[in-house]
Length: 415
Ligand SMILES: [Zn+2]
Image: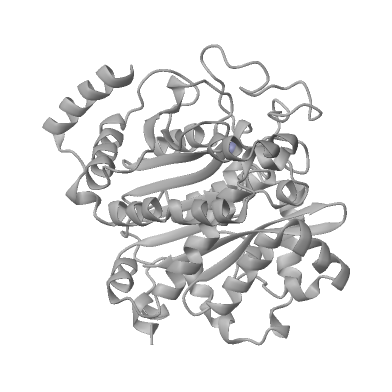
């Protein structure tokens, strides 16, 4: 019924677009098992690809995700996953059940203690290279699993609504949606912030702060035994981040307009929407567009309480992924790449159940059932807004004159 929603594969304009892999879809589950070419890709990844490779076509293993990985897991491992990373099983179920609506790719395979952890990307909607793009990421910090849960719950709703909601179908005919809900599966499995190598993925990009950063928390190179470790100085980024960079190069930087929402949770009393910079206090080049987006949000949803601000007014940090990708976008002449971080204020949950103070996960995730479902509901409006704002960017992006005024507004607000 929704075949026409995403157009026919023959009209695909971009040969590098992974959408051309759709022929695999009709193969049986058994036929989709790991092929030698995929294994080679995984080996390459583990050996490490260089940054320059990222401009090439994605390797074979990013072809349609091998969802049968769930059946390749032993019963024992499945039980362990169910206990420690049920989000991944839920995501794989969505990928199986909605394979006609979304394309799932295994972007990386992270090995830890001889267990394979897939990093998936899911793509929905328009394959037109001019379609605006919304990228959603979650779980970069493994312990902040509520971010992944919010994304998966929203995705589930979206996929259900796409079965019957013509308005939403039309939206997605004109927009590309890319979702990477579980960026750090090993960290999530181990219930820790860092990845399996002890590296904080959001301190790991090759960019240094200009100015003082919080001790340790701003990122350091002392070693993986302390939290917020950036990784080795001249080492390349961690495999999870390389996978993210590859997705961004392949599906985001080559679009005329793109936004990102990266979901986190942290110790604050309020939900915050942060935009770059994290590495310096100066205003970012696109600050007028951020002010326009902030005004659009606040005027459309005056009863919502997110604080919409530059991250740098709170603290500076080294190695921030979105600073890094923002400057990558500038280097590639992508004029409108607007990443945002949602920092869900976890004190809101801790305050109401102080017992959560006594376990690490409780500091970053709501643990009481009704509060948990409330958090899953709470951000739906924001995610729907991001979809609509990305699609309708022409209706709110400031013109030259407005840009001047909004730049002044930004200066008086924050800089
Ligand atoms: Zn975080």
